[in-house]
Image (cartoon, rainbow, N blue to C red; front, top):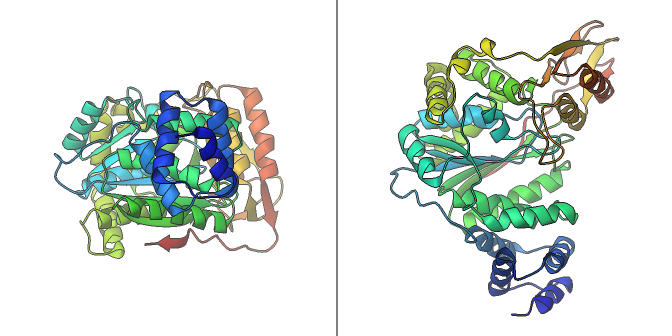
Length: 434
């Protein structure tokens, strides 16, 4: 096939065949198509889009650029969850043990944080000794033993995605919904799953800030999952304020422990139980979504989910003494309580800026090479609609550097607005695609 002709075809807004897409992905992965030509294809696809058939073909070509895990030896439905990312979103740490304790297998391949959103791998690796770099053999063994496994993308899983994402990042083509779909779904399908629950965020702290864009992405992901014969439920959820109260790697593990062990109830708990319920339903351990949520609540309240979390941490090399006694974890050198100078109802939170403040403190990375301080982060005490009085502590900041504390303090104070009138809390679940 002729690479130039394929690029020209997409440039002129014509549909590509499955064979043409296979050729492009295979040749680029092997290194026979140079970056500059594949960049031209990415930009043509970004501007003109890819239809459902092209998106499915792209996903399949990326999926089969590497190994697809065969979990047929493990009897039972395998279900995963994917979130498009947000500030304080640590639902995977809560969902995985709940669903596994309810009898559904959860093979979960997660990513690292980049930009204003955190990554599940970074949170897990804040637990001393926890290994996310398991081999595929270890991946299967842990899943068989515990019913759940939490790892990062291996070299064998969708290698085309790693190459293409790096190029998208430097060619201004990251935001393309078909390209996002291919990237997410090629990795998820390679896990060996039978079903998938999607949590697509929308709001000022999400990548998809507008509802219409979030819906478009949710339908694209859901349609692609179904094209591969996978059952799928997609939720569009609010990200106009941090999820839960804790932001930062160990801090988010700590809040997950509060939910799993102590039954903490907030928006994080509510969303985790809904997503877990959907996974339990797709895993055929419930008769409906509502029944699945009830089973998730029962599993959480029984203490079985916390026991399963301890089992997961131990199986992947983590020190469970920190999970049983989280107060033993090392403390940040600097800790500051941020007090409000006026009063009113919390009416607006620039969630993106809160996420960036956590990065200022050392909790995230702007470049892949940046090192993370697992202790750094923020406790954000209030939710939209809450009354705040003068002198109330709106947030607590943790860092190894007083300069970083001062930088984050300014950012947070500029990120919140108060109103004289009580404002409504945002709707957490905005839309369900089933």
